[in-house]
Length: 255
Image (cartoon, rainbow, N blue to C red):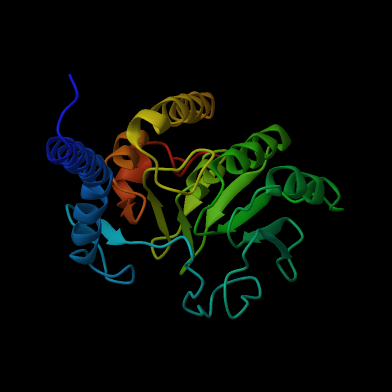
């Protein structure tokens, strides 16, 4: 039986409304958490606001570039952090070199080669990085541990996002009281927001690799609890006692 034209139009309009409604629900399911997260992020203090126990989460952007000039910094600091890791000498001290800037794709192969080419070979790597590529950070970290190098965060310097995985690789790990080490959730293989059902497999595989890496480096994997509780547009900054408890810093009597 054929429906009258007005009935057909009414049915088609109903289906269209239903489809639009379903599309709206799906869109809100993806955008809702982002809107809530952005609202929460705006309520957080700025990154340069001092932290205290229980008040350690700050607004964060991976485009972090400017850091204060610190008179005691042993290497030359550019006006802004480079967009990829830059290997810099420490004048008058060939036992130390500095890695500053974001960790970019390809740095995992480039930086170990650059370090291996240094003569004399350094003993300690100073870090000053807002983070970046997790995979490259792990690759750099494995190279540092294989070379038996120590890692250090100096006064006024930061080690955020993926950078703590490089810090973790040091045979001895030092963080100045005026330095900052922080973690948050990571993107794996993408920097765009995806529905959870598309991203969960990559996230689980990435987190498993990171946890295995931390365990191999002798770091307490409870570090990941703080990371997974902190969204990508915020950063959880560790207190000194947490750094020690998680073994991100070495005991004073360790080499």
